[in-house]
Length: 599
Image (cartoon, rainbow, N blue to C red; front, side, top):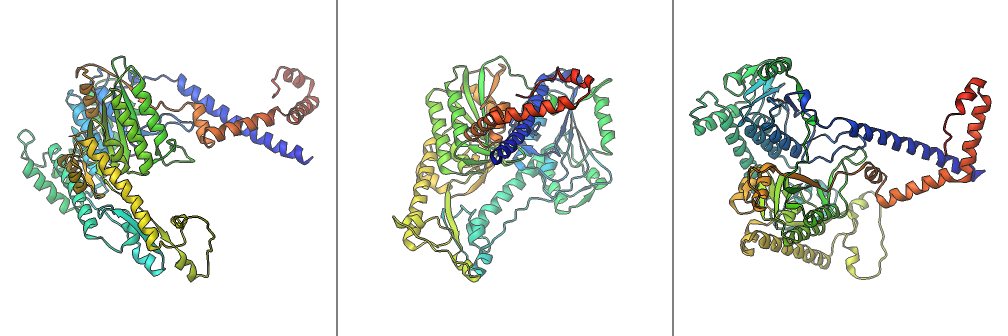
C-alpha cells in the first residue's frame, strides 16, 4: 500500500508537469503562428526605455518575451531607416537612469536614423535621476517633450564604494586577497576602510571620462541657447556644465535653457507624432517589428552576456534571472560559426564584467581557432567588457567599444575571508582532519592562510596574470612591457582604451558589422544575412534547462514516463475512468464514450 501511495504521488506530480509542458507547448505554437512582420500595421516605431533593458536577447521563452535588448533595438532602428513604411520613431524616455554605454549606443542609433530625413520624437515624465545618461539617450530627438509638472535633476556622475574592512576588523574576520596589481581593486571593499591611492585615481578618472563624454555628446545635440547651424561646442559644453552645477531645475527652466523643446503630456506628444507621420498613421511597438534573416552574404553574430563561467550559458527565466556567459556555449557557437562555409566573418558581442579565467581562456582559444580557419573576428563591446570580458576579446582582428564602455581590467585577484576568530566570539568552533599536502587547506573559510600557503596561492595567481598579459600582448600586437604598464587590473573607459591601444575604434554593434563586412571583402552597400550563434533554445531545450540541465532533465522526464506507464498507475487511471462512467447519467455515458482515456 505504501508503494501504491508513492506511485500515486508521482503520478499526480507527473500530471501537473505534463499539463505545464502542454501549456508551454501551446504558447509556443501560438507564438509561432503569430504574424512575424507587423510593419503593415503601423508606421511609427514605438520604443519604451522605461522597461528593463538587457544587452542581448535570449529570444522568446516559456514565460514570454525576454524583453528589450540593445542589440535588437539598434538593428531594428537601422532597418527602419531604409523602410519606406516607417515614418518616424517615438521614444518614451527613462526618467531615472540608464547604463552609460547602452544610452550612448541607443542615442547613436537615433542620430543615424535621422540621416534618412525621418523624425524622432521623445517624451519624458521628468528626468528625475541625477546622472546624465538617460537624458543623453534621447537628447538627439527632433522634438524632446517634458511633462510640465516634472523636473530636470541631471547634475553629473557619482560613484560610491562601500568598504567593509573596518567591520571585518571589528569582528576579527581575516579578509586576505592577492591582487595583480594595485588597480585590481574589487577586493578592496573587503580589505580596506577607504580608497587606496590607486583605487581613488582609477575611479576618479573613470567618473571624469564618463562625465566628459556625456557632456560633449549632449552639447552636440542641444543648441542650449546657441545657433544649431553654427554650433560653438566649447560654449555649449561650458553652458551645460553650468546647468548641471545648478541642478535641479523646473520643467520651465529646462525648456528656457534649451534642454527640452516642448512642455506637455504624453498623450499630446503621441498626437504630435501621428500628425507628423500623416493621416491614418499608427504606432508599432518595437518588439513587433521584425528582423528578417536576409539573403545576402552571411555574417555570424555571437553574443555573450553576464558573468563568465565554465559550462553552459544560463539564466533569463524567473527561476534563474541572472544571465551567465558559459564557456562551453560560447566556444561551441564560435566553432560552429567558423565551420559554417556560408559564414564570411564573425561579430562577437561581449557584455561581461568578467569571471573565471579558465572559462575565459577556453573562449580565447575558440576565437584563435576561428581566425586560423580564415574567418575574421570583430568584437563589439557592450556596457562592460572587463577582466575576462577583455580576455576573450583580446585576440580579435578588431575591437569596437563605445566611449563609455568599461573595459580593460587586465588583472586577476583571489582570496578568502577566514572566520575562525569571528566564530570564537560566539563559541563556535570548526575542527578539521586532513591528509595530503598542506594546500588542502587553501580554500578553507575557517583557517587563515599560513605564510607558506599564501605564497603558494600568490604564485598561482601570478601564473594567471602572466598568461593574461601575454594573451593581450599577442592579440593586440603590443609589447609585453607596455601591456604590463597599462594592465595592473585597471578599468578604462572605451575612450581611454582607444588612446592606449586596447580598443581599435569607437562605436557600437552596427560599426562592428561594417568592419566585419570590410574584413570579409563585402561591399559596404551589400545587404547581408546576420545569423545568430548559438541559435535560440527550442521549447524542449528550455524545458530541459528549466529542469536542471539535459542530463537531469532527461532523468526526470524518463522517471515521469516510467511512473505513468507503470501497471499500478494504469490500473488506477482505468479504475478512475470506470468510476466516473458508472456514476454518470445515460446521456453523460454516451458523451464519455467518445472521450479519450489517459494512457
